[in-house]
Length: 198
Image 1 (cartoon, rainbow, N blue to C red):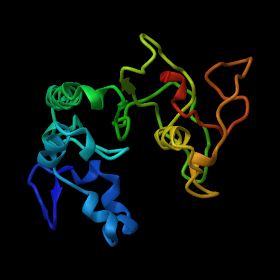
Image 2: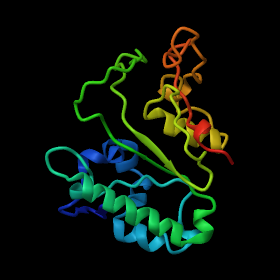
Image 3: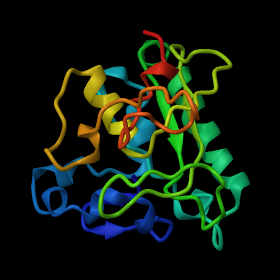
Image 4: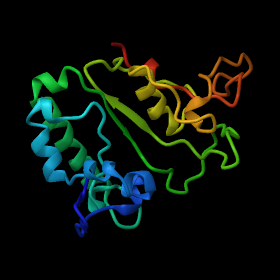
């Protein structure tokens, strides 16, 4: 969100939006799917206008990114988004909102980091599921990274992985008796399905 046609709003967070870095999106018909926040909040009033999956990028000033955005503004944007989804009762009854950060902001992390591929992986970032299907009060320590969101989408809609090389093709982690946070079958990435009960 934040883009409309060929113009970009001054509060558009380009570094927050991975879709604009995809030539398949930006040079094809999928580019029309990139809409601004006004279109998003308008569509949230009508369940039939929402796609099965929507990626929402906060405005630059509400992104929570260190250096130019306050966390309070990110929380305000998130509160507005969740309120808008919950106000549409039919939409809320079939929605899972997954909230995460693009990166760890350069902070040190003592947690285990897998070698997944040539790019490695990075420090942990928070992930929160807001949904009537969310397992209440559950904290899941399954090893995941951002590909877990894609694995969740693929698992929910019975889709296959993007490619033989993409991280979403990795298996689900199996318990390691010596350390529950380190997958015994690494490299492995969870699919978030343990956080949601349909």
